[in-house]
Amino acid sequence: MGLRIRRAAWGADHGDDPPLGAGSGGGQPLQPATSDRAALKAIRLAVFVREQGIPQELEWDQADAQAIHLLALAEPEGTPVGTARLLPSGQIGRLAVLPEWRGRGVGTALLRRLLAIARQYDHPRPFLNAQVGALHFYVRAGFHPVGEVFEEAGIPHLRMELHPTPTSDARP
Figure (cartoon, rainbow, N blue to C red):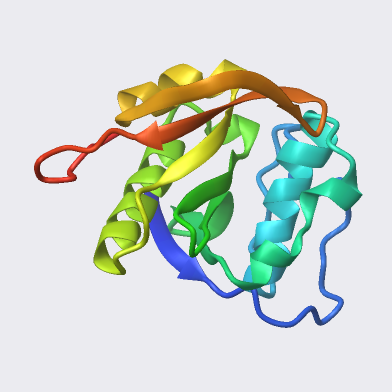
């Protein structure tokens, strides 16, 4: 099965959000959504709210409207399996992959695409607040830790910045 990464529109909310239980890791993949926003929200609800216990009111912020969003789609069906966003400040965040799709390169593909977009549109140097359990993933991508561990939404995080390189071609 192939994977396709594409930009997704946050757009207006038309009330087409999926139920909270959609794609929550019970072995059933998330079905194709009727809109990009519904797909983005369904993945983030499954991973951050249901799996990690982040309160729903903390998951959504005003930055979503300004961000470049990506969707990872399993082909040939086009089933949404992952998402990530890039803010104008260069901050990468909300990288989420459904549990049954982890370990298949989905997160790496999303991160590579966001780094390419950041270079293409001359964003400030990318940075992110990584969950401590995912530090190795970001280190492999060329990020380095900055500062001390802090808590965000009840989960330990560490700020990470992309190592500057002569060609700015860090690859996860």
